[in-house]
Image (cartoon, helix red, strand yellow):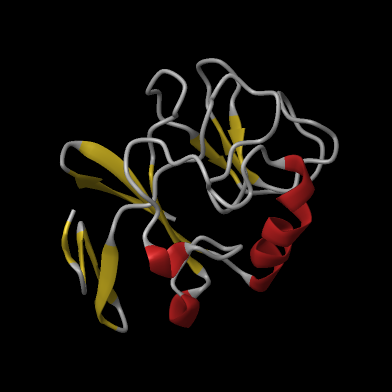
Length: 143
């Protein structure tokens, strides 16, 4: 994972493993809005309307705005699955917001019964090359 700044906010770029992608599918029943029908501050790009919330040709790459949808804190990566401090015993891996305990899965979807009302935003993005991504712009224009 790396964090970059875009328009003054953190954006997480996560290269998910096969195990992490399997954890996304496993979390479907535990998240509040699995299909992101209620976006937070920007619409979910059409190319990310899938279970991984990523481009089909780069499904392992997750790009989300790293701002909790509750009160704007920055969630922390907690990618390791299993029981650990401040997380449930069946934790599949994801992000934990240290401010009020909201949790998000490895696709940036908020778990049920948490303070955060919506999933993390997915900005428009496109790949300039196999190793470079442009955030805030895609084939349809700028965000």
